[in-house]
Image (tube, rainbow, N blue to C red; front, side, top):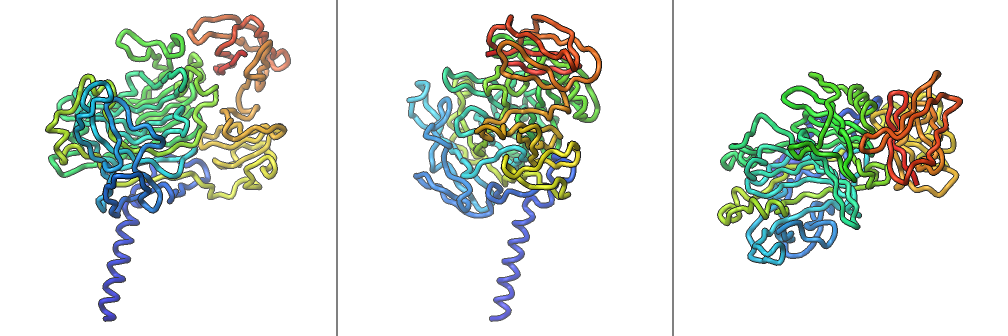
Length: 504
């Protein structure tokens, strides 16, 4: 009896060790910042080493981490019909299955039954989110993404068209900035947002690679949401694309390209003759260099690559987001690439599998700073040395509460003399670190702070790239008249930097 008991304990601990090793030997590829380590978020991470049988009703699973539907009552785009019973966990993977339906309510054509999974907890920056995914080998989109509860801010970690002709050789690295009414949707449309990989091509796509003749393979897709206007994308642990303020950096055939948008046409970046966003390549390099990306942003036309139309009011992406996993038949797919009945009926091909999801946040390991306060009531005063603080720490400077980001910049959190809320945060640097504009939004004038010694030309430019006016400024004479500007969004270029200006 004792031997049996010891044997049971052996297998129990062996099982726990196996589960613990699901991703523990895979380092987080992103840099947590000086003095920081990565801390696993257990309420959002899952190895799916358990069983959950498909059911016909909405329910939680995975110890309450997930539920088997979308985060509101909407049941899917295009000809998609998300159903509770299309979600299961088979002891090793989260599995989303699809099938044909003759329901023609959407678009007047037969649709696709599919599954959708949403996290019960939300993520907010700075955060690293990654998953090991085997996409469905079918003409549908396999998706792993983040979305704010009000559906206005979305970061797509993977949107992969496993067996869609031509598109199956790409992974679309994207995000969306929405206005809900009237519905307006921005997402990157530059050519480099369609990421190519040498493992796949036009004849052998990601669906084929993952399916692997039934011996499933998985691709690791991750995003480090560093700050409101800073996203880093990783494929199989390799950094492949970065969105930062007014510029992008993308690894193309082994070479990093640093680019910015040329101009705006209305609310969106101007396209080139091929239908992709027109860009300027500022520089290239064999290795990624954040300083080069910063320089590209500072020398750009001042157009945000995260939210060029200013749909988020100049704040960037600040809202907490749900993690969502699903397969879908998007409208353009339904019109041009509807899966065949045989593919929809093939359980070997039509399943999206997720081996694990892991979420980390940077945590200070150095003890830098004098307090861990996070509010106007308990945050410490700024000590004048930005390098002495770690990501996630709060300070008060000039009556303003700031939080440090992992890229070394600071987010404006609240005016400690008002009732400002953290959800109203906008991207700011401490004044001495780079130029800033105030008031912003402005009406009759704007003041430029943070200038070095000497005279500088301040140029006001429209989002279309047209110079409206210019003026010489310095530390003493630092005020520009804005009475000649109509309400809207403008760019002020000065001292080698470009800042967005809102006119009421």
